[in-house]
Amino acid sequence: MNVIADIWYQVIRHWKTQIRMKVWIFLNLFQPILWLVLFTQIFKSLSNNPELGSTSYLQFFAPGVVVMTVMFGSAWAGMGMLYDIDMGILSKMLATPVSRISIITSRVVASMMLLVLQAIIIFILAIIMGVDIETGVPGVLLALLIVSLLGLGFSAFSNGLALLFKRPEPLMGVINFVSMPMMFMSSTMMPGNLLPGWLDTVRQFNPVDYAVVGVRGLVLEGYIWSDLWQSLVVLTAWAIAGIFFGTMMFRSKAE
Amino acid sequence: MSTIQTDKLTKVFPGGITAVDAIDFEVREGEIFGFLGPNGAGKTTTIKMLNTLIRPTSGTAVVAGFDVVKHPAEVRRSIGYVAQDVGIDEHATGRENLTLYGRFYRLDGKTIKERVDSLFALVDLASFEDKMVSTYSGGMRKRLDIAMGLIHQPKLIFLDEPTVGLDPQTRARMWEYIQSLARTMGITIFLTTHYMDEADKLADRIAIIDRGKIMTIGTPDELKRSIGGDVVTLSPCGTGEPECAAFMERTRSVLSGQQFVKGLQASNGDVAVYVAQGESAAPNIMRLLAGAGVEVQRLSVSRPTLDDVFLKYTGRTIRAQEGTATSYAEMQRKRNRRPS
Image 1: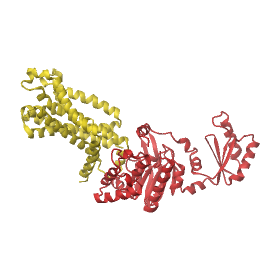
Image 2 (image 1 turned 60 degrees about the horizontal axis):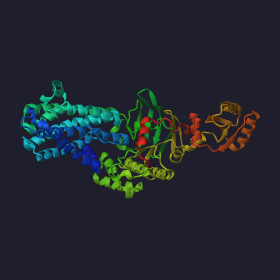
Image 3 (image 1 turned 30 degrees about the vertical axis):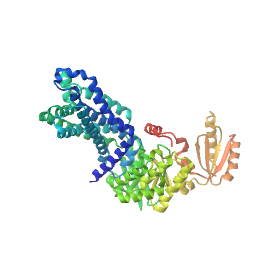
Image 4 (image 1 turned 135 degrees about the vertical axis):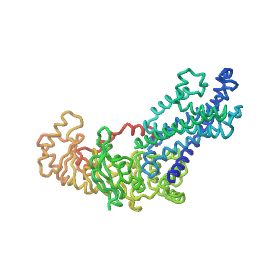
């Protein structure tokens, strides 16, 4: 029970910090809208591609925007941990009886809450723009679970890397180095069968792709359980790996 | 009864640097124990072993009745820690910072509210409790930091360099707070400092630490008495002159055989001569040196200070040590800190 309480009070702290940054709130809500509008304009001509069939690029890309938003948002989650390390807040906290696991968990939970909110906003906007979600509200809830698992893994890895490096430069470097290729080496922007053969193979090892495939299936086609199970299993493994890494770094580096 | 008891406490960092080298000391209940030494002497490393932030390489420490390695959770519940870096969230109010710490110690909401109010009054921040910490001055932050270390009413509090970077007035105020914590609230205080005057004014007993070792422990008076009387400081030459070393050597050889001279220490171009009676020894010293052809440029007579004690036990002055041994990470943090 203490652990839950510790997580709760720290989540409140992180939320208050976020809400006080008006610009940050505005950008976080505005960015997915920008992506949704901008990318569908850029790739408009793709709608004529026979591979997409009767699907519009907006219809195809909207699930990708949800995944992208969650991925980029959670990949940067470690920056807040750096502030706590840098200001001496973390070491001061560690001298109190606060549960160790709650420190990293509360950060992951706080960033997940924001990302789920962002995902909901994108879904609503997509519906307004004319996207038809095949599986309705239950499907959206399942999609939110899928992106939450993806974000959980990213956020935990990011916090672990912050503890490992303790400085912003290497952390930012790794995030940029990893997140962009992870997005492009997936079917986020292009249908898998339009990708060159090697990329189509590589994406089988990319958790981002499993999230995209899962969410896109729910939006475009309905419950394709063979794909959904795969997505859920792979992303659960990804999330567990992230939490394991984050906890390990916390144990060994949080001195 | 002892609040802290260490036995051959040692920390060797990866890379083989021995930061703390088999130290033994005891802190008694209710006292202000001063840990005095230059930057890099091992003061913060010692505190971090005592408050469970780092594990000792060897040796043991019992804090508030609990072994720091075997029962870290119990130690954490019993102590308050005010770090050298002010570990406060700037993007929250003073009250939010303090309340969160109350939660960490599992106090209930009502108790926290009462204690927050009384602590803000104690550290004179009553009208600032709902202001963002980013608007606080350096001294206000330090006071809030101390309040955060007191929220769970610990019996023992660690203050790591509590007045570094504060202006003289704020420093004097901080000294009053620290004294009142010990005298009126009965809290045992473990205080590290590299300021002689701070240790002299606040500490009931002082341990002098240098290069990871404790050189001596005693009350400020005991330590000063160990010098054996007065200090006559001679400056035979300006610093940096090539023949300076020779002058120092001659001064040494002339004076070291004399009966009235109890000790000699050379540092930074000065020679400190420890004597029973400074006023009567000074003319003697002048006469002897003149006889040997050593010209003295300046001479002063003083009662011993902790600086002389430090010099006697380490062979160096603490001032010569300042500003060295600052890690890169520390410099980085200080540069990032906005001026207060």
